[in-house]
Image 1 (spheres, rainbow, N blue to C red):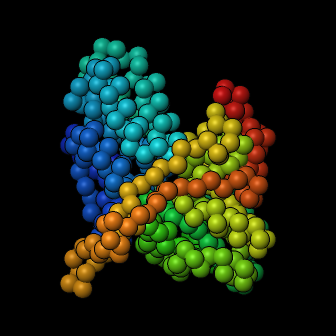
Image 2: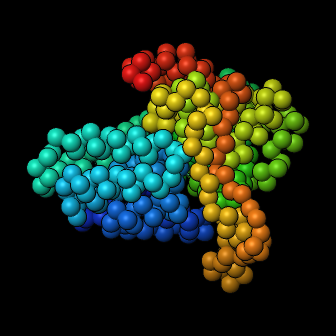
Image 3: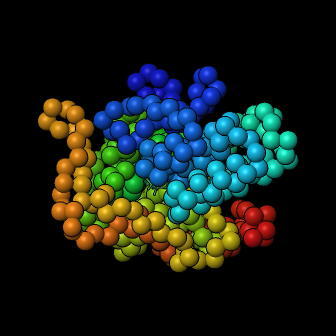
Length: 366
Ligand code: MRU
């Protein structure tokens, strides 16, 4: 994407080849700040604190984290320690495990543990990043007919979508998952408007609004609690979201609050689509009930951050430190509430049969 006249991805190897640079998403939407990450520890912290976030990007970031570890020590022992450290950062998105397994598979033959292993690591991470871009672009193409189905060329009014969290290019390397077809639709000159829910407590909806605005896509931010009302009133043509882990039966685990939107969409007779790249499908898991749900720090609810009157970053206390809070970061939407899954190989039913029809080799291997 282009931001401020500059072609940007969310993550890349630094020009001196020694470290990794990322857009620091904790500073958005107020500031585009590029952070330089110099060690596997710095990368693990960046993932855990959500400087980089979104299931596909977490996977790519972990792959680059392995490169940083190999730069310091390309031994088998260091590889194991780095993978364990990165794996422990966030439990829900399966892309993280997928990318680490992929790095291990590629690096296994390089038992000489010398510079060749390091170069192989950089090449593998770059290829995982490029594959993510290609997969998102393919989901854009496959999702487009769904949009055409509800809007249709020349229908005379914009299609109204609703999304949750951030499943745009910031959550991936480029393009995004759920927002990829929206960008393609908009770039082809067709009208679309997106309702963006804030997504308390981390407010990833603000990232979505920011990136849609960069691209000129009309959108409106809503409080999370407004979603049911707008769906009930017929103001939304379809809901489109991403997923952090899709079970083999088509259940999807995504940002907390997704399930409530799916229920309201079902009640309103509105399609509920989920963009699910294969890196987020866990064929070995037979039900969404088994997905590990990340429990995040209660201070994400007790404090809110933003800009103060003078324009500087500020954190404001909403609840006393002693207040009991609970902060599950994801929820599971049963397959029965998902109208279609959009993958890089095409669109399918949210079911074992649907997934198997598109990914027979992976479904049978698990
Ligand atoms: O906690 P986050 O911000 O990493 O959660 C991100 C989401 O829930 C996205 O919807 C998900 O990763 C899928 S979209 C790329």
